[in-house]
Image 1: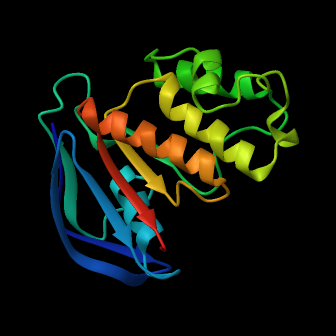
Image 2: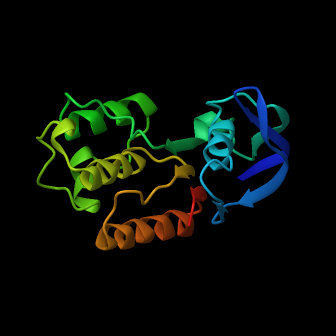
Image 3: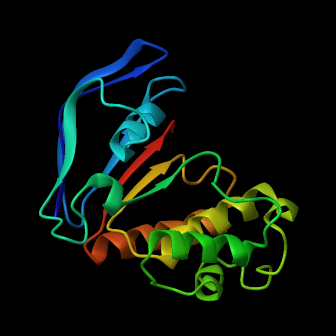
Length: 186
């Protein structure tokens, strides 16, 4: 499987943010997009994910087969908002995302253990600290297997130990043939 961007362009508020972006990522490869705040990194990830329209060019999956015929079907997008309901428990949120994606990988409980939150699945998401919320959102990547991870500032709010744990999860994903596109201002 390959993720391919050809002459990709994106806009924010009707203004061009980037243009002429080209890349092709194979299984096991990562692309780290860096730049200052407002440079268009988040816009690029949202365009790749299909959350914003393509202003120019195209982005597509090649060799995804029946399981992953499109970028949308192949990707997990981890954005700034974490996409979790504050009134639901952490476990309920993860079960929702597992059921929504239609592909089991780890149980909610196993995913929480993996990110170091095994003892808080019963708590409402809204009760969690910023770092715990981010780790719970990372657990979403683990409850259903998708080959493409689109990560927007994935370590925001994480402490050093959690950053290292997530680094290991990303290496494991790549070693298993996954693809990662991550944006950071660092």
